[in-house]
Image (cartoon, rainbow, N blue to C red; front, side):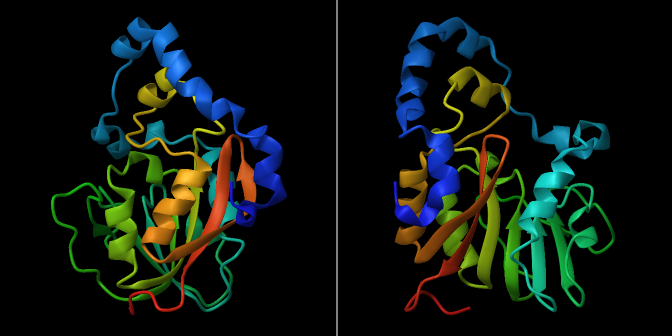
Length: 213
């Protein structure tokens, strides 16, 4: 694991032993995995399916963002992020569903990702990346119009049970080392700044020489 993820992540990782348990658990519980219900995107149209404590993760992800930043949030959900942004920030919600008249409705798994409505200093993904099928494509697209990204991610190092991951509807499964390599291939450099439950909280910036916004 890259040292950039820091001691907080290392403390939870247990030297990466849990990542190897993913395949073993799948072999031990094949019927449970097969019977686990896959994710239904329509779930996110129902406000009652948003857990109240998810706002704490959103609050933590807002911490690196400076005053006056232009911020776009993907998976805006119940629009909690503006409550935690510092003064002077401009906020653009983006979601599968129109959470407000200002929401940019966008599907991150669409065959073609659309042109963005503007350029931004920060993008925020709170509990979203696990539902995106092609993270490499996503971060390549973000590099066109975003300078920095704050995100959470439930890596295999933290949560390796394939049954749980399938029940959650997650469609990608990376260790932290794999996620770091994926981001670097798209000219992003990530640093962990905290944890929420079994998820890493990180920020990523475009590396010098990467695509211009």
